[in-house]
Length: 132
Image 1: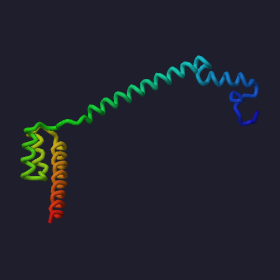
Image 2: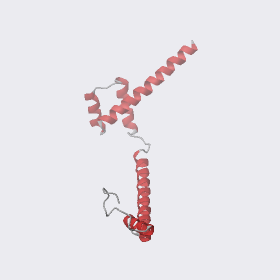
Image 3: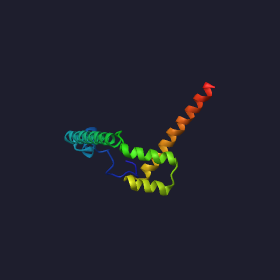
Image 4: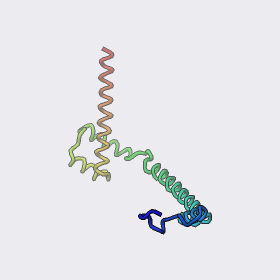
């Protein structure tokens, strides 16, 4: 046995079977421990699968496509958009208070409509150039 090795760590006095048995004991008690380990692993896998399924269901609910605002609100927002495509923070805050929406929702709505409006205008200009 080397001088720097701890006698408890030494395997020199044990046969290979005894060494393996001790190793099994450390890992979980031989065959019975192995069964327990496998059962725990299976339970953990099932729990993980359940959690993943729950997350998928929550994500579907969270990202379901539907109208954010009613038709009457859309008409009012369109009227405001026609008057002013880029409302100030104060105007958007007053709109959010008026419609019961958040400032971020109002800002995003105007941003999306500006993009859509600009896209349509560029298409029209492109079509006009082609027809000339």
